Length: 227
Image (cartoon, rainbow, N blue to C red; front, side, top):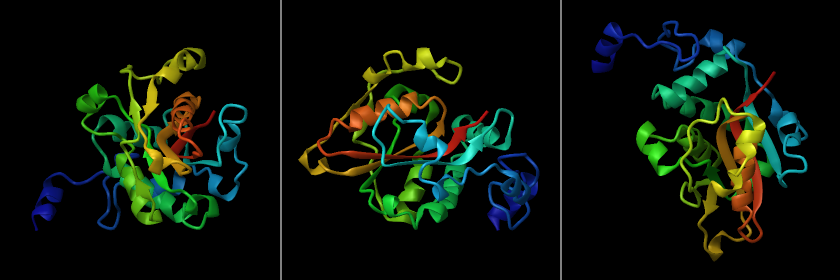
């Protein structure tokens, strides 16, 4: 009843296009769901996201759910997720990708899901890690443990969205570190993030995780930048 009253005065809108949601719609409207650019990476293990890390890091599997275009639906979703407190977007995308990934043999071999961490200061400023809901939803749907403690960010840095590949790569290997014990040896870790752009952040996180003896890395993200 209370929710209905709230919706009467503040009707929910689509996180992608800001049109009013119908009663049977949740977070993203039907039209945006229909028009949203899917990568279908899960259907091709040798996809472009996987190839992005050739010669950089050894990965078992890499995929993203959506294509990220400037001024597109996905950019709006990620912006609202990161900067407008709409954490439920991560939940919806996690539910969506769970359906695509649940039959993957490689994903079934994963031991833990690891989010790209925020620095403690950034976490205080934003109030949440934008990939948490995405990761915990995948964890529940795929029955894989979620571990947000093993990977840590040592250095606070401002947003990298406007930095060049060269600048982004400069010194990034010092940003992340890993805290582990013997029980973490020989595990397959699924590293998750919001958007694959240059891949520098994911590469640095992977280098940190590969300090663990016997570690294997896979990567899954909400979106991948696409020209």
